[in-house]
Structures are given as C-alpha cells and as structure tokens.
Amino acid sequence: MRNYIDDFRDSEVISRIVQSLQGYSGPKLKIMEVCGTHTMAISRYGLRSLLPRQIELVSGPGCPVCVTPTSYIDSATELADSKNVIITTFGDMMRVPGNNSTLLHKKAQGSNVQMVYSPLNAVELARNNPDKEVVFLSVGFETTTPVIALSVLKAKSEGIKNYSVLTANKTMPEAIKALADDKELQIDGFLYPGHVSAIIGTDFFSYVAYNMEKAGVVAGFEPLDILYSIKVLVDNIANGSIVFENMYSRIVAREGNIKAQQKMYEVFEPVDVVWRGIGMIPRSGLGLVKDYEQFDAAKKFDIKSKDIPEPKGCLCGEVLKGKKRPGDCKLFKKRCTPETPVGSCMVSSEGTCAAYYKYGE
Ligand code: SF4
Image 1: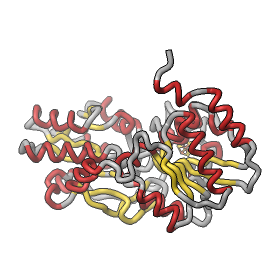
Image 2 (image 1 turned 90 degrees about the vertical axis):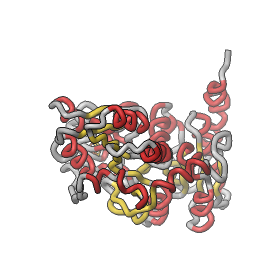
Image 3 (image 1 turned 180 degrees about the horizontal axis):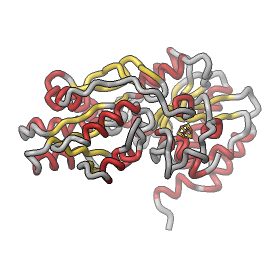
Image 4 (image 1 turned 60 degrees about the vertical axis):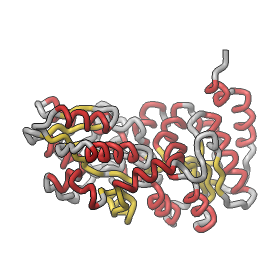
C-alpha cells in the first residue's frame, strides 16, 4: 500500500528528473541549499552524487545551532554554574563546544541543565519551581521563534516572573542578502528552506530574484521535492529567466503564516547579531521588545557578549558560507568527529560537517 510520502520518493519519476539534469551542458552552476535540513536530506539520499559535474550544490548557514557564537555557549555554561538557575534547551545545544565546556559537561558535573521539547515545557518548569530561575536557550530561525514568543506571552499572562530567554535567534533574509551580495561566492541560485518559508512567506525570495538577480526556489524535503526544485532552478537559469518559484506550495503560501509572524513580532524585534564564523550581520537577529524585556536573561543576569575566536583549525565559518567543504578542514574525521566535535558544524543534526561525516562526501 502506497502512502503520501511514497509519491515523493518514486524512483521512476526520480530517474526521469535525474536523466534530464544529467543532460545539462551549460556553464557551471553553483546552487546553495541554505538550510541544514536540506543539507541533511541531500546527503542522506545521496542526491549530490546524482547531479552532473556542471551543477555544484554548496551548503549554507541555515543550521541555527551551527551559527550560534561560542560566546553564547560560554554565557550559557557560566549561567549553569549558578545554584538557583535551571537551564533548559533543545537537545542539539547540549553538545556544542564553548571555549571551556559544554552544557552536557555541566550537567554531568551537577548543574541543573534540562532538555525540553518545547519552550512551553520550560514555562511549566518555572511555574513548578518558583524558587528557581528557569532560562530557556532561545536559539532558532523563524521556524522555532514563534513558539518561543508564545512561551514569553504565556509567562507574562500567567504572571510567571522566574522565566527568561537567552536570545540568539536569527532570521534568514539579511543573511541571504549577504550571501547573494558576496562577489567571491558567486551563487547562481538558491534552494530556499520550506519550513522557514512556511512562516515568512515568499515575497522576500521574489525580491532577491528581481532586485538582486539571483534565481531561487522554495523546496520541500523529500528527494523528489529537492531534485525537481533543482531542475526547475537549473532550467530557469539556463533559459536566462532569473525568477523565483515556489515548489512547496502544498505547505508554503505567499503571505506565510501571518498569525505566527504577529506573535513573533509582538515579542521580538530585529537586532544586529553575530553569526558564528561569519561575523555581525545587521538586523539579522531578534531581541525582546521593551514590553517584554523582563524576560530577557541577558538583562536579568547582566550577561555581556564577548568576542571569542573559533577553535584553532576549525573552518566552520567558511563551511557555513559555502566557501569550503568539510573535507577541506584538516580536523575533519580526525580530531573532529560527532563524538568529539571541535566546531558546531559537527554537532548539530543539521550541521554540514555532521552530514558529510555520516553520509560521506
Ligand atoms: Fe569545524 Fe569540525 Fe567542521 Fe572542521 S570538521 S570545520 S573543525 S566542525
């Protein structure tokens, strides 16, 4: 019995698309898959190996854990040392190396660090532990930020004062603009993330196509979604048609999820933030608006961000910009493995180095 997903893994249809892509003989094209979920899916299904040499797929910075700066991890691990603080976080953040430690190490040493599946669980924890300060590590793109906003709204509406969020939230558009503008990188087209697009809509991607002259498609995450989207992108570029197309219309609407956007911007506003390995990108992050600053852990605990360099030899920054591949890093598969990660790109389940390690180059 076939199910809905089988249609997006149909080997016959996939073979026809691959054949058509193999027939491409135009100039070399560099296509960036912006998001880590695409990087993982492309590696898992071996899609890179199905493309002709003329079509190069490079990975971008769309893994939220990977672009979280070392200084943030250091602030979180230092905060975990405080006796009356409970640190709550999504699982991936537990193993990201800071300058001195990881949250997993802190937990092993007795700090109160708890993995949660939703920031709403962290609010519940705060409600049940009124003598403790519960801090949620607020890391993510537009996909996760709305639910973090909801947690702040919930804490406020219930008068919970011992809940706060340590923000490192990022937004995609300014980062994509920086990548589209990068003369050294020379991207021909973008494969945009389906989940982020489901929240923010597609107007921005049309802007990139028509104002910055970079073609793009929004793609889903099944093999057929990805390969067909690449085919549409390649055909458009080959025909000189620098446009944007939504190839994930079963999920993504032009206007996005307006309710989620409203909640997000009720609680957060754009701020300048540092992307790990990339540097500061103006207005590419989200900080709490004045009405909700009582939930800002950085203010509550007087946390100042510090400038901390990447671990020696780690090329994560260049990998995140699509300028290097994991194999270009001398530490890859040697000193840096998923068990002993040196950089964040090896930690996250969406990290490029982790994907290449697990599924090969
Ligand atoms: Fe950094 Fe490890 Fe990737 Fe090298 S292999 S770039 S050290 S995360």
